[in-house]
Length: 117
Image 1 (spheres, one colour):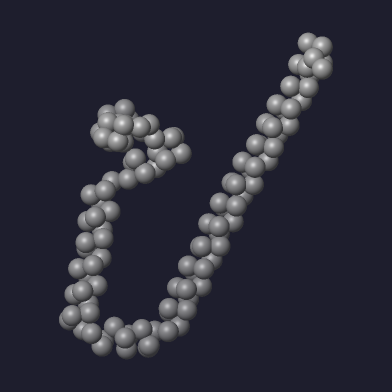
Image 2: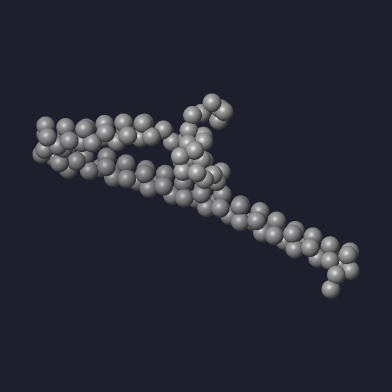
């Protein structure tokens, strides 16, 4: 991310607190693009419902097999994403466990070396 990105310090300047790095994604979201996308979706939906209120229902009824294929594809994509997220979580969990174990071992060695009780 370039240093000239204008909203990097937006939260710090306006709200007075530092945003953790894990929330950096939300700092990078282009609000204008989200609003434009939402507005265009609402307009397209209203246009379809206004121009042909019954036509879209018959099209959906006639193309039920295509909708089933699309649903199966979306289900597969969702499962794949869920599996990927779980794999990342599991990797982070095992790394955290290793780090915790290493910290406990280090503390034990330090106590043994310093002659602590």
